[in-house]
Length: 222
Image 1: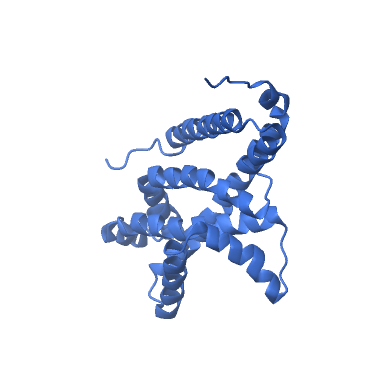
Image 2 (image 1 turned 90 degrees about the vertical axis):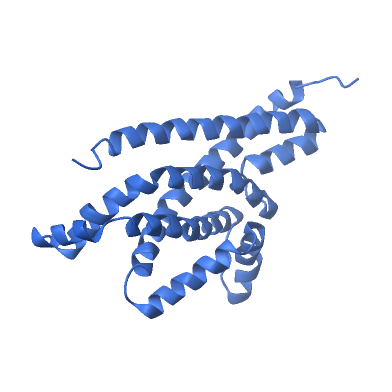
C-alpha cells in the first residue's frame, strides 16, 4: 500500500510558489502583447492589402500547424544561429506571444467580420474618422463578441506554458520537476502542482468574469 507523504513537498512549497508566480507573469505578459499582435494582424487580414494578408495567413498557418514545443525549440535553440540569443524566460515569453498572436488573430478576425456593414456606414455618416470607426464601431462590439473565446484561449495558453520547462524556464512545471528530483515524492509533488494549476485557472476565470461584467455591460442593441 502506498503511503502519502506531503511533508517534503510542503517543505519546498516556496519553490512551487515562485514557479507559479513566474507562470502568472509569463501568461499575463504574453496575453497583453499577444492581444496587441492579434488586433494588428486581424486588422491587416481584414484589409484589402493582398500582400499583407498573405504574410499574415502564412504566419497563422505555420503557428497553428506546428507543435508549440517545436516553436519554443526553434526560438531558443535556432535563433542563436542567427546571432539572437535569449534567456530561457525571454524565449518562453516570445514563444507564448507568437503562439497566442496566431490563434488570437483568427478569433478577433471572426469578431470583426461579425460587424454589419450598416454599422460602419452609420459611423461614416456621423462623421467619424476611420480610426474612430475601427475603435468604437468595430473593435469594441467585436471584442465583446469574442471575449469568451479569447479568455478561454488565454487559460489554455497558461496551461500550455508548462511546456516552457523544456528549455529550463523557471515556471511552475519546472519548479515541480526540480522539487521532485530533490524529494523523489513524484506522486505528491505532481498532485500539488496539478492543484495549483487548477486554482490558477479557476482564479483567472473569475477575474475574466468580473472584467466582462465591468467592461461590456452596455446593451448589444436597442
